[in-house]
Each structure stands twice: as structure tokens, then as C-alpha cells.
Image 1 (cartoon, rainbow, N blue to C red):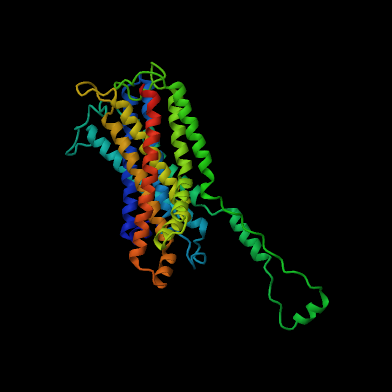
Image 2: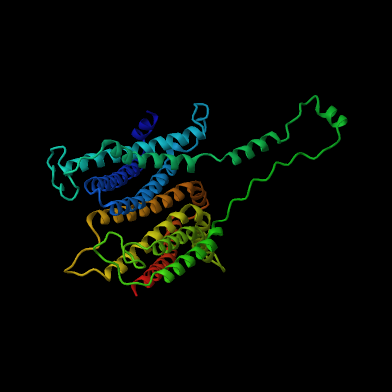
Length: 422
């Protein structure tokens, strides 16, 4: 009930983000229902049903990441002064964010179920039966499996929110220990007596807080994993262009998908994700190197400060973009204008959903980073920094990131597709 009340009084931009999460959840729910319908209608095609289910895992992960980014940027679930007295501490706010995310995903899954049944001809509406052949409308869906698949996304999204947004016990214990060891002020009447009776001792020093992990720490690991993935593909990826008749068909095996090729592809994508914060950090370092002006220095420092927050979503976006470019180039070699099509409507829907979710996640992370700099921006404006300089720094940051990440994404896509297209 509290989640619904907060949603009713939320900012329109926050409501728009939640509606986007619900729309993305509807897309994933529709893909899962299509997979279930195909499995029920074709019980002998176990391999194809399994491949379709595995393909649904990619959009599912993208939507979970987007829902987590929206929950993290929601101002209603951030700690505020006085909320502890009302019984809304950090743990309760985390549960509130998880409940809001689960509600949005459940609404999207319910809409997907209604749309799927309408297109199959089960509801008798204006669009009844318009896609009965594509969605295998002749087979009856088992309701237990249907509800299980539709409940998968809300459960995963809520669990991801609880894990990612839960307050760290180590930090809380460190703050409590520091507060316990802080020197207390003696009473006026006992100050001289205590000074005379006890020897002078140094005041206890609270333990130092653990140093945060630098943003560029994952860059060497990311580069190494990219190299391993490309080497694995070069080793096992010798073969003809994929058959466009098959849902997922890559070189390396004649009867379907090569595990080595898919593993190398996934390793290269994982390396890009790990290298994202480090690349963002070093972009800021290069901007602030030498004897920079005010705009360049401001842009570089902001990039270094926000590298961890925006670097990982940018890495995911680059990984998805490079995979899309490689797939387009790879399957384009086998795509005849008068022959079969390698991408069906459901495959295109899943790819579009993944690309939309990772792009929206990167934009949400950038807006969240800007919101966290509100105090710094206000202080700079009080010092007389014009707004045009802040806008110039934002444009400069965007241009530098595009100039670095775009060629890198294209180069990795070409290297991924090169061993498989020969």
C-alpha cells in the first residue's frame, strides 16, 4: 500500500521510468509465453524449445538490470532525515524499492498475458485470433507453467533490488564502532579530578574506513577476458557462414550452435562490461591531463568521480552493440534477398528489447549521477560558474566517451565476426 501511495505522488519522470519498466516486463513476458506456446505445440522439438528459452534469458537479464537502475534512482526510496523514527530505515526502504519494482514488473507481465491470449483468440476481443498461427493458438497453455514463467521476472527483479540496495553491514558496523570509540565530553566537576587521577592518554583513533575499490581496477581483467574470448573464437570459429534457416546457428559445428564460439562471444562481451568503468575513468584522466582549462578540468573530474556509476551500464551497452553489429555482419553473409530470413519477428522483438533496455539503463545511470551532483552544481553556481560552462563540460564528456567507446565497440564487433565469416 505504501508503494502505491508513493507511486501516486511521485514525480512524472519517476512515473515514466516505472511505466518503461512495466513495458519492458511486458515484452519479456510476451517472449516467455511465446516460448511456452511453441514448446506445448511442438513437444518433439525439444532442442528448438530450449534454444528459444535460452534466448529469452538475454532480454530477461536486460530488463532486470533496467529495473534495478530505476529502483536505485528513485528518490522515494533514498534515506532521509526523520524516516528512521517512522520505522523506515535503510532495510525498510530497500524492501520498499523491491516491492515497487515487483509491482511494476507484475503489471507488465499481466498485460503481456492479456495481449498474448487476445492474439491467440482466447478472449474474443477486436484483435482476437490475428496471430493464431504464429503463436500456436491450437495448443492449450498449462496455467501452472504460465504463472511460473510470468512470476519469474518480478521475483528476479525484486531479489536483485534487495541484494544491490541492501545497506552494507560492514559500513554500518564501522560507523557504529567509530561512534562508540569517540571521546566523550567529561562533566565540569569531574574534569580536573579525572585529569589528576588518570594519566594522560591519547584519545582513541577510530579505525579508518575501508578504501573504495578504484574504478579502473577492472580494466586489466576486462582486456584480458576480451583477449581470451577473441582467441577462443579464432580457435574454434573456422567454418562457413551460418544457416539462416536455423534460429541460432554459428560455425564450429554442422548441427547447430558451437559452445566454443558462443563462449568466446560471451567472454568478449563480459570483458567489455568489466572494462567499462576503467575506460570511463581514463577518459576523465585524459581530459584533465596537462594544463587543462576550466571546462576540460571540470569534465575530466566529473568523469573520474562518476566512472563506477555510469561505467558499468556503458560497458553493457557497448557489449550489446558490438554483439548486434557482429550478428548483423555474420548473418548478413547468409541473407539472400530472395531466400529465407535469419531473423524472425520474435527474435527481432527480443533484440530490440535488449537494445532499448541497455540504452535506457545507461541514460538512467547518467541522470542518477547528475542528480547526485546537485549539491556540487549548486556550490559551483554560487561561486559564479556560469551555466554555459556546465553545459559545455557535459557536452565535452559525451563527445569524449563517444569518441573512445564507438571505435572500440566497432573493432571488437569486427574481431568477433572475423573468425566466423571466413
